[in-house]
Length: 255
Image (cartoon, rainbow, N blue to C red; front, top):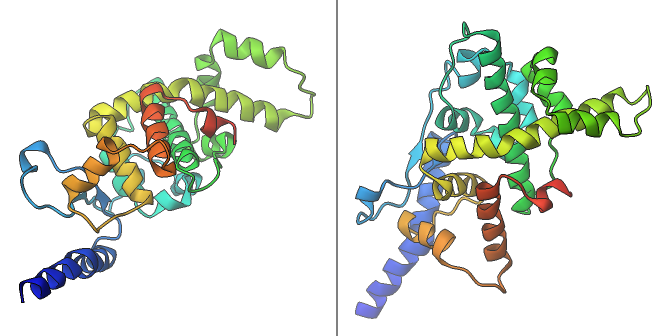
């Protein structure tokens, strides 16, 4: 009898409960963003904790950002984009000075690059970051973009062999250089916003690879305290953690 009860309990925890949680979230909270439970709740058997942002008005509407910006994010993140943006960024007063508002848009440009890089490193897809399209969607002022280019960027571009017909390629390289230069600072800011590299990594990882088969603490432990050099997933997680620490990844840039 005891063995039977243990088998029933195991089946419930491994199959029925995860399926029930997944079905409930998909039905009632499809835009929810799973997060790491706060430390004081560590001893509780929490299976899922997430942020849920109001869809109306959306983050984009509040901050006067065109809806087209969503299409510049990786498809895997688009459904949860409003919650993700609300979790990672504070709203900005659209009456802020010209420079402050454009700086805010640059952060969103870097955020798009960050997500595309994360997808590439996680082996969920290619790095399809389009800096020109994203800059256009955000309507970042061209004078501001020129003003934040470093001398090294400008020298590299002017010494490269672009022809007069290569306007798009020139813009692509210039805007990508700006995003690459600014992304490490954005990542540091996001880590402070959400609680550190581990919280940011878990939040983005679970957006791509949701897992309802274990309590939250076990999932966190598996993400950060388990490493097998012969396990591809372990290696990927380590690369992602290093990417969030360094702000750069060869794998993400050399697709």
